[in-house]
Amino acid sequence: MASDITLHYFHGRGIGEPIRLLLTVGEIVFTDRRYSVDEFANMAALKAQLPFGQMPALEVDGVFLGQTDSIARLAARLAGLYPSDPIEAARSDMIVVHQAELSSALAKMSFDGVPGAPGTKMVPQEERQKRIAAWVETTLPGALLRLERLAQEGCMVGAQLSWADICVFNRLNQLLDIDEDVLHADFPKLRTVYDRVEALPQIRAWIQAHQDDYPRFRADG
Ligand SMILES: N[C@@H](CCC(=O)N[C@@H](CS)C(=O)NCC(=O)O)C(=O)O
Image 1 (cartoon, rainbow, N blue to C red):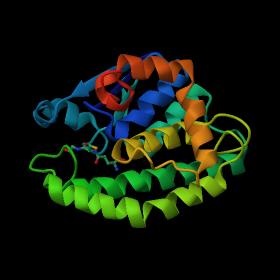
Image 2 (cartoon, protein in one colour):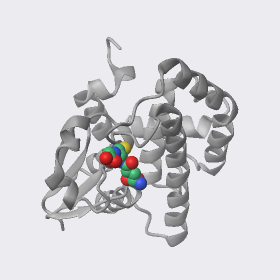
Image 3 (cartoon, helix red, strand yellow):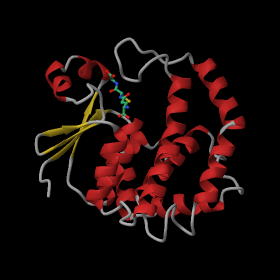
Image 4 (tube, rainbow, N blue to C red):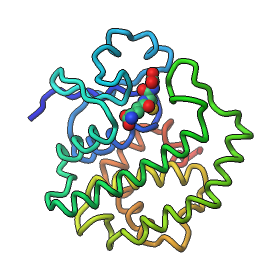
């Protein structure tokens, strides 16, 4: 199998974090290459190699792959976290797409363009908070209820941990950073999935080693 893997992405969790978590849970050795926005803007040689000129990108033995969903699925396969049953695989796919849509919605409310692209600015804080608070109140509960109804006992799909659990954990982290009450009593199965993933030793070690990306977990946070 692949021997030399590098994930190219910006600093911070962003849309690249589930890929890092999947590789980490699978104990796949990889280089976690992180860029500042300015640094990336000036890396013409790297950009020319990226299939869509954007990150995250996964470099596997010199081959560059793009698109978060495809890379995460590959990481899940490498990690043994992609269901082998076709229907379970499709159920995991639809859950991963659904949680990614929540991230896209938040990005649209937070940036006036493509995150990390030259010229893109953050929406002013007051406006951003207003938009996100309204979305958390009106749209998010229904979206989470859909996930809650799909969840099984302890996992999102079937009886085994899959990439759907890791991706849902990552999204819930983002939502809990926004509103720590987001996983209230209406979502017991999602809470179980979240707690189960958070308790994985690889996830614990990752969060411990990346405290700046996980302020909610910091003892002084
Ligand atoms: N559809 C792509 C979107 C990738 C994307 O928007 N990447 C942003 C960072 S989150 C980026 O590379 N921005 C820098 C640029 O476009 O120049 C995916 O899912 O991977």
